[in-house]
Length: 272
Image 1 (cartoon, rainbow, N blue to C red):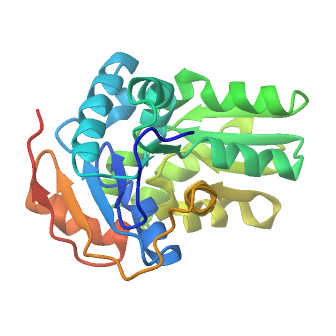
Image 2 (image 1 turned 180 degrees about the vertical axis):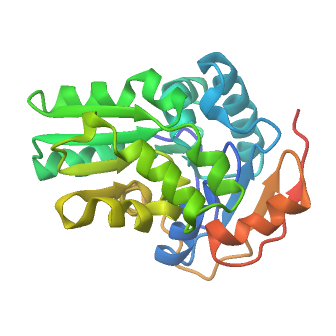
């Protein structure tokens, strides 16, 4: 993407999600690109995006990106699979050259294709699975690949309520993953930014025979590559990160520690 503005290295990276699950991506950026300043926006007023229509998701995303661009972000990371599937192309077209856009789908697709698997499984929200974006992109790049996709709508609310690494989460996860369509898969794609928090449970279920992949690290590598390509990697000490939500509750602030591994102060900013 050719930027029409003249960006500079010290500008922040904007990261957004339907709620706080995208903090897994923000945390990875913070760890691997420690000089980059992050402005995070969680649309907690409308979560989850997974059961919203594509048109509604696009409307929310347009408003959020406008908010982040007004804060001078050099890059926008769509840290939500539902938003990436429904709105990525719309955002690139609507804000041409105003920032570098990164989604969490394409880096994971590329990583899977490199492995040349014969059959993979996908778990995600209803919106992501029904968009067919993973299935379509995988077929385009590797026509022989068999893809088994399953909607897993209980996982996001379960995780946000802190129900993982316990008997409740174990029953829900095992019920989903026992689906017959996953028989013979070599890898499972965690196609939601919440799911890294239950990755160990999923790995325990499958054992060593199935590789469990999420987009987090692959997305950070893509971010670094795109910033480096345009000489926009910040090489000086960053300013402090900023974290905004469209609807504030104490429970959101407490839950952020699950996704970011430390306490965060959330600023309520009602863009609606």
